[in-house]
Figure 1: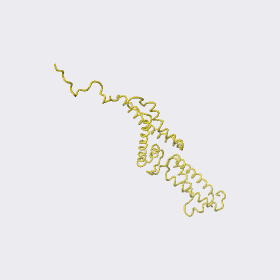
Figure 2: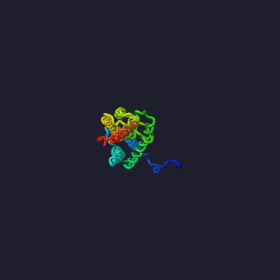
Figure 3: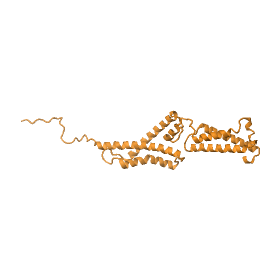
Length: 247
């Protein structure tokens, strides 16, 4: 009796050594979940940074500078991926990552998010409603003006009242030829002092806005500059008339 021949196409018994077994689905899923977790952590960090910027300005705190700024940026980029790697990264099997790879991926995602926030800031500086524009830019890039898309920020409540006060006091000194003889009139000193005090307050508020990284309305700057120039001119006239207080 003839033994049937074994077909040449028959697969050999046992495991196929040339085709490794696919990675377990659970291992790959854990790896993908860790990468997604890094992405979500970077997004949450940028949202938290936006809130921190707004809190800093509303509490009149300075932005970190020098070594503090370098330390903050380093912590912002390194602490989240290191913590997530220790807590949530798969430690063995296919899809296992390394700490350096996790940090590199997080930094790359952060760089892309930083680029997207600047694009959003440029769009906000051009198209957002003027009353909401400063707060949007403050949250996105840490300042309410853009060096690429210039605009005139609205005046805050403090600046608005300062400008109104300076304009009212500045109107006490007429413009034109009558301005020249003001230093010799009765009550000049008290009027000059009142305008000087109001102008100093306005200048102080402008300086505070700039210190916090906020834009300043052009009207406020122009009002302060005009008043200070007229005060200096009047003081020179008082010196020429021999008034000791102006020296």
